[in-house]
Length: 399
Image (cartoon, rainbow, N blue to C red; front, side):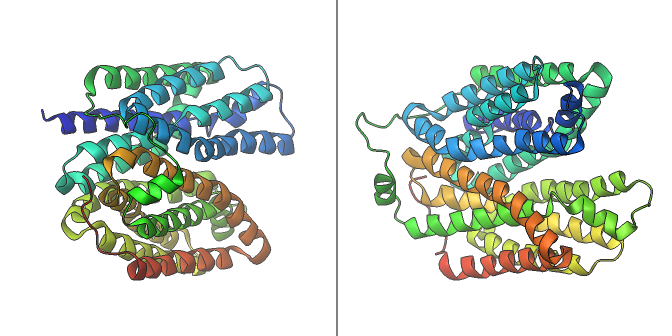
């Protein structure tokens, strides 16, 4: 097997497991907190939100540091660090004795995570340019698949063996990602010369299309913000549609998330091939506009079936965004600085996730769900127009 393909397949497995490791805690942490003595609903909500939100914030803050280290020491090292670190922190969760322990460990989890962003850098720098869109599309699908199945896996293992053992089992699975990376990934890496500056000024001087990088970062933030804006309150919106006393509200709410995720996962791998044929610029701006146009009608939905159809169509458009963003970044970034560029973009994404989770709830609480959907839809559609006008045609640079 060609080296780049073997690297891709190992990264697919590792990205999936790392995503499971981050997301499987979502249904478990509130239950775990109850086991630790937190029974007041307000306290439970606050501790749960803090435990989950701080992880995303730490990822955003620490990603640039790991990206610089990747450019100095190699991308394989970052994958080994992230997989082993997440295996350890998940195991530590199983020993928590107080809510403060959970929050501290989740902070550590966010600080040392970064397998997915490291995988993007490694795959982007080792894959032939004509296959980059396809490879990064598969990687996005693997990461998304882990996010979708993680809560289900965590909930199933927790129900079968107990919550503490769920963390231990996921820790063991992350350990397999560490071992597969250790033994099967061989990186072709040339370290930066000693004394090479890693400042933003050096990075700017090394990337001819610096404005394109800034525009893509804006697009990444808008994508993350608008995607996460609807997530925290979508269940409440479903409840409003079907009625307060309707049966199976939790199931119906879960269905709206699942259809979006499944469509996005499938579309990521399919659209990745079209990115290689048509270029990431075209896929990017058309996907942004499409997502915006599919988001706005959700403001006028009055039944669950229409909402699920629109959410499925939304997922198809979302499937082109992350692969398009990462492929465009790969096309304009010299290999020597790929770690920093993808890490900064990861920070932008996670900051968008963090702020979006707060912003969407605020808009909905102040002006209603309809305004929230119309506002976020208009923002993301206008971002597509902005990228069509500002982005130059994709160029192959130092790849």
